[in-house]
Image (cartoon, rainbow, N blue to C red; front, side, top):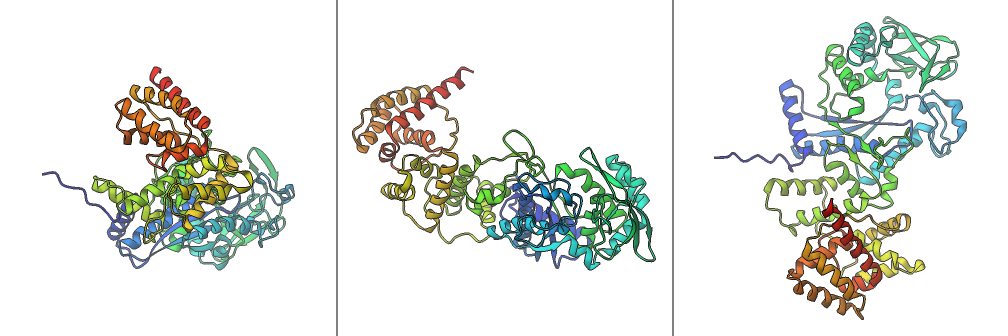
Length: 537
């Protein structure tokens, strides 16, 4: 007899990770009183979708751990000791005078925060707060300043030669064979990466350094020549990235941290240092793929293709962004504004599954979909389903609405189609109208057609050109379907897919009449041509 698979928690990858993490911690014999997950918060550039994804995934694992009955919290660690390597696009050129200074030492160019790093990390914290994510914020600078990482830094510097060899063996990088993995902030010029640390005094806990200069992106930046000392008990400097993770993990007792494949070698180095130097078993990891833009480039501040969470919030509810992050953790993801309507519609579908309005026969699949809906709402789902107005319907109606009365027009038509307008509906309408204003229309997915459907649709577009009312159109669709031996429900479903990229929607007669007969004829005609081209390939 075939053994059925057990559903863990809510059946998602988050639940599986939480379960495996707990089992690992039990084997290690470590306390399970509080299980900490961690995410880094970058503060050197504009936070993008990928930056937020790190924190969301860590919090998702925290939620899954809580569902398994364990106390858990997420640490959001802001690397505000990082040096500014480049002035981001759109920022004042005056920032060049602060290059390679810690971002927490640079004034906010916009004047609304205490520092450059506060401005950048503040954008990400705002995005997390708007999504309802709970986290414990830790400033890198304050952490170093407090001296809490001193013991870890001390052990790493005492074993600098071993650390240098580990880094070389894993990454091939040789520079830490000849210098300490610690960057002091020059007391003379204020820069961080221009310094080289060459000797550690373990009795006084101080590092001796010279401000010699550094090569950044192929350009050499001279140091000021100053020689001084840095106290590892203060924020006089920071560990190199290839050792700092290990110090953080051991100091803060971190049990989970995900990472992108672009830093896999650094994580491997830190894992080894954690075990062999700091005698701390490193966190349970999940490696994820990166977000790419439509051209296949990595989403990043340096690439100049930043897509911020705030931009998403102009067109989609926070739950839709959470769904994007929680859907899966593996596989490269292409992200663009075009996916927002799809994710918004997917959120509606998951709500229907959750409230049993859509039946899913496969038990594991049903529980996974219900679980995704729960996590997209941070385990605080609504008590009842909302009105599901298709996002694409709002966008299409806005195209034919009077420019000065778009919202009123859309609401009146939607009510005429029988949809109830509630508070959530109004939010969705405003978001979709923003999308229509900025992007014009939603890219339609190809809809496959069989020969009978092509013949029926060709006849229908000839018929509806002469329609004199919405009722005429509704009857024409029924009659055309029957004439060509197609069950009317199937023919209507195909039209919804063509016009709204989903299987259902408003009463078609009034909707087609509202958006315009010529427009509908054009859309159906393009779909037929596209289907014929795909058949001939």
